[in-house]
Every structure is written in C-alpha cells, then in structure tokens.
Length: 100
Image (cartoon, rainbow, N blue to C red; front, top):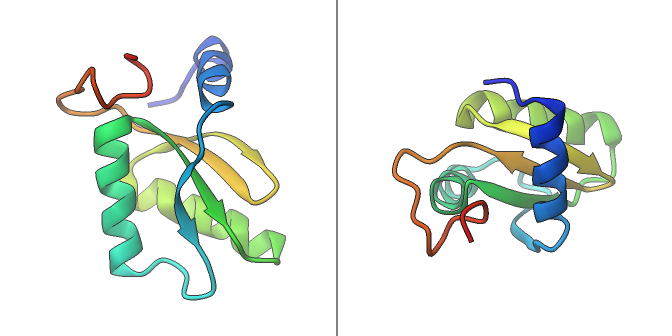
C-alpha cells in the first residue's frame, strides 16, 4: 500500500490543517490508545498523532509499530507529530478528511 509522491503531497496539504486526534505519552502504546488510533483511522482515514516522548529513536520505533499494527502508512513526520493514512473500508463522507 505504498503511496505515490503525488498522493503524499496531497495528503500533506490536507493534513496541514488537522489537529492531533491521539496523543501518546509515557505509557506508550496501550490497548486503549491502539483502539482509539484504529477508530480514528477508520473514521477519518488521515490523522495526526502527537508522540510526546523526548527520545527520537523511541518515537520512530513507535511510529513503525503503529504502522505495522494498524496496517497504515506514515505520510509525514515533523518533530513529535506524525501524519498517518489508512484507507477506510466504508468511507463516510461526513467524517473522512479526504472526502470533505
């Protein structure tokens, strides 16, 4: 499910106006956080996640783990904020950040 450069550019433009919907702190990826990420990806398809962990390598490992578990793809990472994309099974035009 690799995104093309044109798709990434388009999603970055859309993602610029988005606020983080999930925040990950010291507890890391708990079941509750994973459930919320899954729900947000299914509803919105394109979401921002703030990872409030100081260590850069731990942040990148968490991003890779989220991609692996959620079968999503990272569109962009800036500092502690990452933009994730996963196509919804049934996109809802009222909720999807891509269809609005």
